[in-house]
Image 1 (cartoon, rainbow, N blue to C red):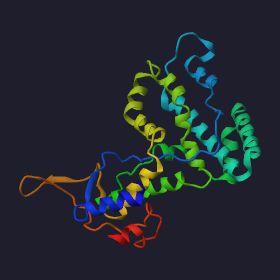
Image 2: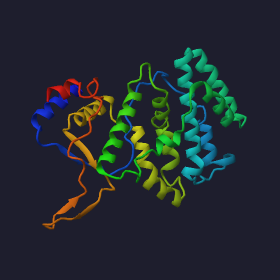
Image 3: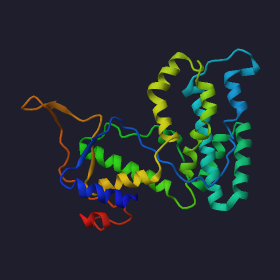
Image 4: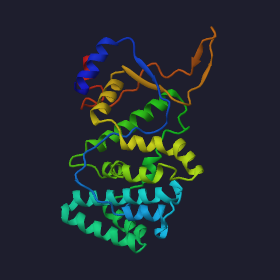
Length: 281
């Protein structure tokens, strides 16, 4: 069922009864995209690099690592490399991508990676992996309407990247976490992290990685936005929603605006209030 048909059907059944959902997380939802670069061989996160973390100097005893201090910098560097390689491929084809890949690989070996990334960012744009992995709606959401707008804008921006013609360098970079899934597990699991790092990883990092590793297909994001455009679905109760005891002892929530703000019809492919779905209501 298309996003348009799904939202139209739901709107017909729920015209007077919008569905209010509760967001238990402030984290960004990441959808899947189109990857134009095919099979990818890591530039930074090679098997040798991971072996150097767990068995430095070739020692037999396995060393426990700190995820954020030892492993995450390598992952972030790989995400930057893939963003730049994909950007080069889209800008100048496979030959340019191969040249940039060679330059990045040599820079990593020569400890000039940050300098070369900075130089390439002038040509291809900047990409900050941390801002994607740790992106969230923070406590600046002063109301349910702010939270709902933030959720909508995050999903819409991510959908634009997923549907980018020819593929998206941002999506290619995010795909690194899926590509490296088995290698990361080989370091993390079976007591591979220090106790403090393991606790931090489970509580703060794992859920964020899962969102990049196994996000929804673009059609699901289109359907959600179409339902929000139609006013059928409201996502205005977030984890920082205020709750108090009401006059009848029932819980009373800080209410959102009764009327959803007009959207741009992202899920239907039309402009504000001119979308086929909105006009049919």
